[in-house]
Image (cartoon, rainbow, N blue to C red; front, side, top):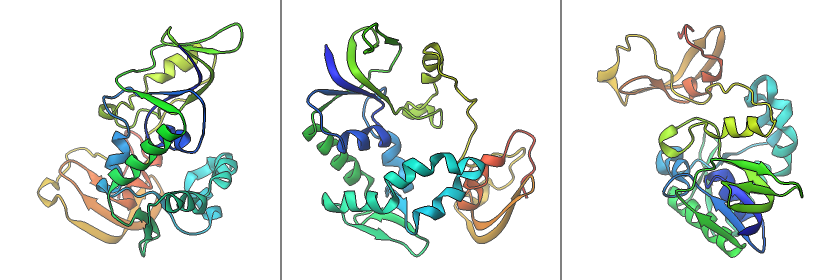
Length: 249
């Protein structure tokens, strides 16, 4: 069957795209049995949607490549996204630390809204359907898995952050076959696991304003002990600099 457009990935990015884009006949292909699995995990199920403040302040948090994301961030800024959700009946709250959540503190409310808007906008969802092949046809249209055809293709399936949710990096070899260069993925915004982790019994305990250093990169922020590793904002925001053999202080 031929569609006007196909979105590969029924996560936050793919659903937001569908929720904001009206179309006559669109298809969302989701690898997992249900859409939005990482979205439901966000903010421990409370869904940290964005952060308050000036969008210009976001750029530095993307490290040395921040300037490359300036244009898309400005087009759909944090304020514009907040206006989007509130205009569709999801009131938001901003905590003292600047993090923005739905007032209900339920990620399911956000997911349900995006699913509803996507359906209203003309998008159909097909779950349990990973993208296994993509072919560019002579007329410029795309053929996905040898049977789903579309004039436009949007790839929004994420990287390889949480394989159990479907984000396992399996899209990368497919993109390379299309002639696209794929930069080797690196972890970011992840907990850090160390050798001989000694704090399992302290799981759940956190510290405020801890000085964290990873190979010379420093940050003062909250740190959390888990069963198996270090987490919390102080760790997550420095994890982009960590690599096997790094020193964490």
